[in-house]
Amino acid sequence: MKRVFALMLFAALAPATPASAQIHPPVSIGPPGGPVTARNHGITVYATGVSNVAADEATINLQISSADNRLTLTRASLQPVIDALVKAGADPASVRLPLSAGAAPTNMTQLTATVTHPTVDEMKRGIITVGAAIAPLTSIQLRGAMVALRTNACADAAAKARTIAIASARKKAAAIASEVGVHLGSVVDVTANESSPDGSCSTQYYVSPDGPQFNTAYGAPASDESYVMIPVRAFLTITYAIK
Image (tube, rainbow, N blue to C red; front, side, top):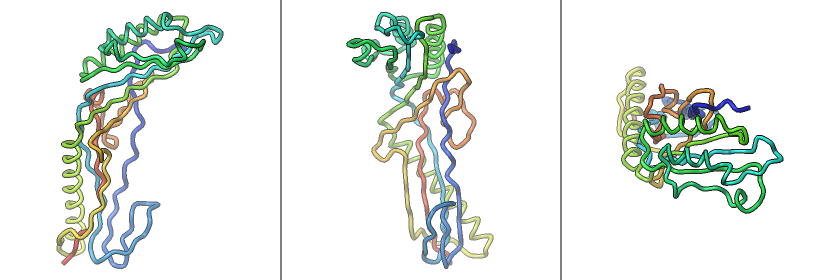
């Protein structure tokens, strides 16, 4: 069923990492479902930090089939969609069709194109442009679509996310120490997990006519920046000594 006129982005929200803390001995209880491990005297807390970084490129992937399964898709039949992608800001040289679409008969294919250094306005206009191009075409159907954002410049955002997580962890631990009448000491153990350990990061949005749901920071309200920003996350487990 062709419902697409102005396509909107959406992405499944990543589940929030549960926060937990315990005074011990005898043990520190981790997140629900996690292992129970013995630790030294101290307070163990779990914290996350999130920082956003602008994407260097947005790759659009359109899954297209012929409206009649007996018909074969060709580059000529897909040319209006290709033209719309280029008009929307995609580099013409980045437009790709699988070899099967040109070398052998097929009634289903994927069409990809890349926009470099995308802006919010460019992505908004592009979604409308591509949707408007597909809507009147009776020979093809849009089966699904995705926008993948990527950048190799994640180091600063990762460092900021880590700083946010560290501050959050200390605030939690200090509150617990105050409540139980002890003083917070130095850090005795740290476990870190980051979403961009190699300096690159990415996220993706599935395109639907049903409305946008962006992959923001654990349920934070989406904004226009969500069209082009990648959330970089840091997850920390820190144990503080008590005195």
